[in-house]
Image (cartoon, rainbow, N blue to C red; front, side):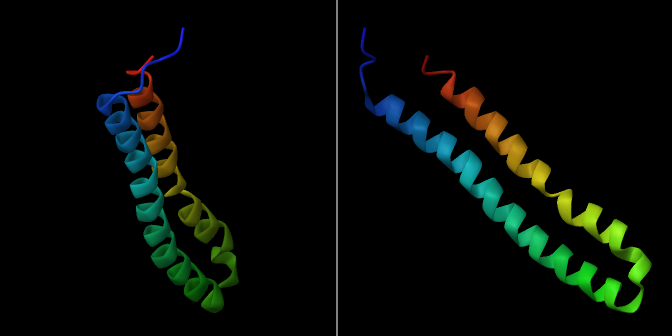
Length: 78
């Protein structure tokens, strides 16, 4: 049985894509600022490498949350 494609299904797909895309853009902007600060801090103190690496990775959780929201939105279709 084929799923009928309607305007509502298209809007749900757009919402899911926005959930992932906008969180990815926000994460990129956050990582840019954090990465620049981390490199500057490591240039002065090399022992800050671990902390800088952890702080750079933390914003990636935003994309994971966006992906979870997109999956939940897409489950409304099926």
